[in-house]
Image (tube, rainbow, N blue to C red; front, side, top):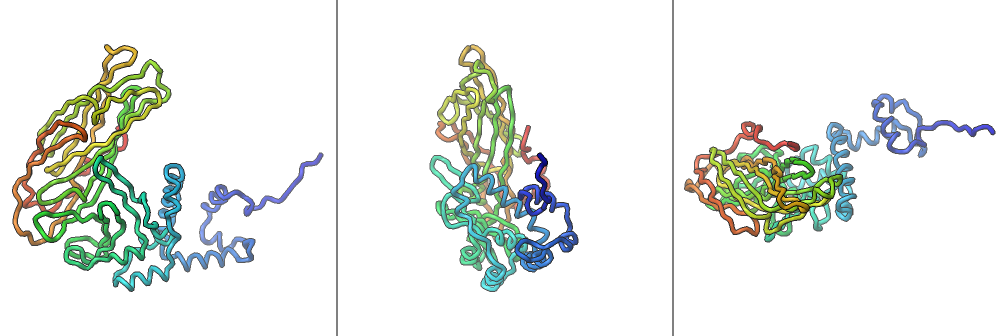
Length: 392
């Protein structure tokens, strides 16, 4: 029986291989291609698309790919958040917003909002959530119309457009649309409370993570700076860190173990070292079995520009309590992000003294004081070597 034959047509290919084929084509190739099923030529379609999005050609591929990767992640982790994303804004809408606020929006911002115009004002927020025992933050990505309504002209925040908003804390991340009051054009920042001045200072948030594996157990650490709980004067920088302890799913059942204690070595920017030991983690003594994951969060406050923490957990085997071993906690840095102060200060603050503690612990450690009176910013280039690598 003769095999049936049919013409091989590009438009019948599934989307993934079709996109792969088209990725090798240039604009000239598309211009000379055949017509679409709708009767519109590839050239006409390209012309229409270029007229609409051509100003964003250098940003669109990266931003479109990033949005798709983000939605793929959300589909697995938080599908309801995808439903909160709004359809993209039009060029006319973005032009109207620029006319309303009297400032130009950066092209990469406009391009991203052409794809998705922020979120509906719901929880959880697309820009991340963080929870402690008595504090919760969830930041919503604002649509451009809502953002324009919060455009700032007050002293200390002139020409700043809100990007995010948290219903629980009132915190917003802002973008400076003009180089004013010490800010660079189009930089993003969080306003930070300043207890000795009317004008706010600006601190940029950063998040970093580290991973270390000891035998069958992997420990990963991520940190988050909380600008809403921090201040420049007095120097009080609040961080939270989340630790994930995981036993490999292919570990032997005989490898099951229980955490007994923790040990921390805390090194300050001036070289002072503190050592802290205590039972369990946040009042718990997790049992680890193959495939088991245990996560917990804690917090710390610093008065010095940078510190890092490292240490180990002590475990014992369930099958043999005499078999005790250490599991490495990778070194993770908590560096005070760059901040800028108003030119005029009411007065210089004195050195600050702050305690450090783990959530649900009764142990306190003294922080190191530091005079920030003459500090006018931190050069992040000088701190590049302190960034925490993703894997150790």
